[in-house]
Amino acid sequence: MDRSVEGWFHGLMGMVIFSGSLPATRLAVADFSPLFLTSARAVIAALLAAAILAVFRPKPPTRADLVALVTVAGGVVVGFPLLTALALQHISAARSVVFIGLLPLATALFGVLRGGERPRPLFWLFSGIGAAAVAGFALVNGGAGSLRGDLPMVAAVLLCGLGYAEGAVLSRRLGGWQVISWALLLSLPLMAVFALATLPASWAAIGGSAWLGFAYVSVFSMLIGFIFWYRGLALGGIARVGQLQLLQPFISLVLSALLLREVVSWPMLATTGLVVLCVAGAKQSA
Image (cartoon, rainbow, N blue to C red; front, side, top):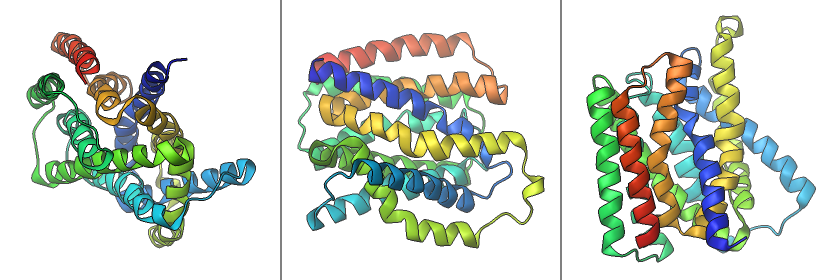
């Protein structure tokens, strides 16, 4: 398979998996505290990653890789999950789309700064139109805002974009699953302490939907999605493949409609069509 095609395939798979993250987080924070959810999901994913590393025994990262791995861990293991969990206590899953729509731009910018990529001006035009379409749709349809919800989402997008770009650069040398596995293992001691310190007062009070959301973000959002996503960014280009995230909010909204009973309307479908064109344009012009 051509490297570019393979990159887009892996990126698409990762994006689809990540699309369930915000609805699942919304379900989980109904009964789990944001700090416990963030730390416990990281612990579970780290234990799974440790088992994978023990089986396949890849070459360990060098000392020079540690700063980049800490950046990845801070952005996608700790920062994004914690900040979105805090935000989703105050805003709806639909409103969070406003900010997720800006994530492709953030990823592309950090791809330029950290990955040395130089997309053409036409790429930025398509990327900007796509981000504006997603954010505009979500602002109209996403419900009321709140500084306690909106500000953490802004910070989450910036940290996530940095973590994506840094992880993609590392993946060119270490491999996608190795990067997220080592980052999770690096964060395990701290996350284990926080998980133990923030255990729920009563497990009996936690509902089945919260457990399902917790399981999804622990296994799929925190580990499996990154295996596909980092490989996709490394093979297909950080800025270019990162534009697939423009489609993520709409898949998230469909899942929110199914899980959280939020409405899917015709403007959403029309905006999705525009976004698909922008992704195709960005792919050709990157």
